[in-house]
Length: 163
Image (cartoon, rainbow, N blue to C red; front, side, top):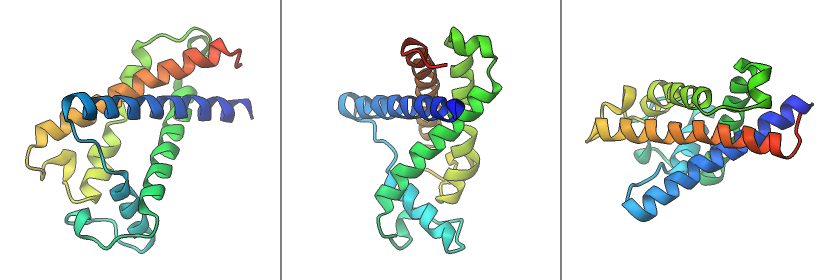
């Protein structure tokens, strides 16, 4: 049970930090962030047997798609955190360093490159978008922020006496 609580805690902190960075980039640099309603639309259509869209914005809306998209976003963050914690050495969890979670965060960019972007009609690694390298850099940036968030979550876990 402690592992599950640990994973949820770290995953929510990491995902929240990722969202905070996206919000700051949008506010101060005008960088648009991912529309999680479209993620919810994609998930909703998977239940109906449709996985690939060309593009997702032209597919019919799903009831409560924004709420579904945000919930899936945080669920994925918790699952990634659990995987990260399972792969981490116990010593790391007691004294978290920054390098390992950032490397792991960068590795998680495989999910949008290989699954989400193709499914939503943007192609492998956003190759069908108007500026694929900009989209790729934004994805990598978001996942670096997630990695930093994993570290922050682990540091906070230790600070509050989690075991």
